[in-house]
Amino acid sequence: MNVMQSKFAQQTDLHSWMELVSLVEDNFPGLIIDEYKQYLIQRIKDKSAVTIKNDDIVIGALTFSKENKEIEFLAVHPDYRKQGIAANMVKFMIAQFEKGTEIFVVTYRNDDLKGKSARRFYKKMGFSEGEYLTLFDYSCQKLLYTTK
Image (cartoon, rainbow, N blue to C red):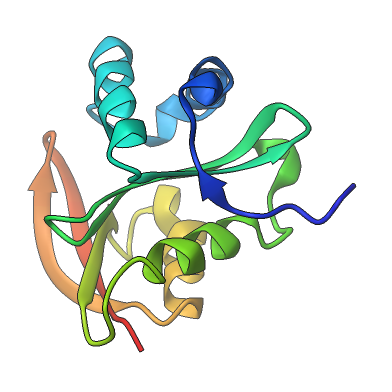
């Protein structure tokens, strides 16, 4: 496998990206595929969508909000996990913000088994625990990171 690099997504990545989303959608409470696709089209236009591809297949996907300073979506194809893909995309996204910017992500709470690996990943990346929230009728927690 070639060294894979994070890049801003292109409209041509849309179909492959949505195939990845269909594989992982159970991990995202409140995700409505048709609405997500329209949102993704806009994020691609805004250069707020990041991919890592193996050939033409999207194996890593991240969207973020420049305005809200938030990671909105992060997924890695199940066959490609634990290869540094998520970390590569998060570092690429962090580089889009000025030093000292506080970025956040909302993920599962500490006591939720669904979020165990996500929380471990974000903490390894330097995120710290923030406030508890309820989104889409699901208990969550905000994790925070300040760019260096």
